[in-house]
Length: 246
Image (cartoon, rainbow, N blue to C red):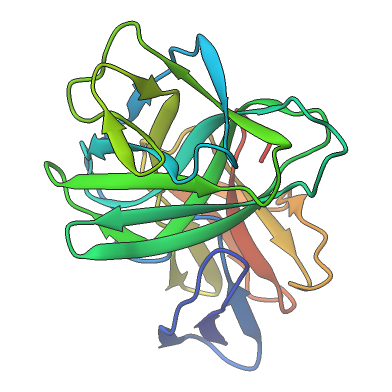
């Protein structure tokens, strides 16, 4: 068997490893394929939301923050569909560092959505203590983003029309992405991820497009992951956040 880490919607990898014979296992995740962080990765949570601004009118609108973790992350902002039917459901979320833009993610929100929604940045490795800026772009006045002037966040501030607004913050969360790793154990394939990724579940699909992601049910649990038999047919794998269903 050859282990080929494949390319998916939110990630692209190139690692090729020899293993057993004859079968190809394509591995992809919502998140990041690479070396796992053994320590717990802290999350950055600023959940206060008291008001909503029109993303299109106040563009560029966003939030500066200081990373508390190393590695790839998802960034969640609080969105509200307050002009339903006035435009598409697609938004663009950009992430910038000291040298400029480091990542961009397209998201599609459900009709009538209100709440936090993640944009994944699996190819961007944040550095703890470094400053970043997340901005969101909407093509029409349909979507708003939540913010607050209470309980100010000390590591950054809200941006409206390109200017930072002291003592105001968007509702935002910066969540580390666990690494999904692959190795061969005797006549089995082992998939494992960091112990702190307890709210992520393993899913598989026979295709990336069209995809049909389903929970992996035939795996045997081991410390830090699962094993699957070598008779496994070609398959894609991913980790999905179980607490938000996305």
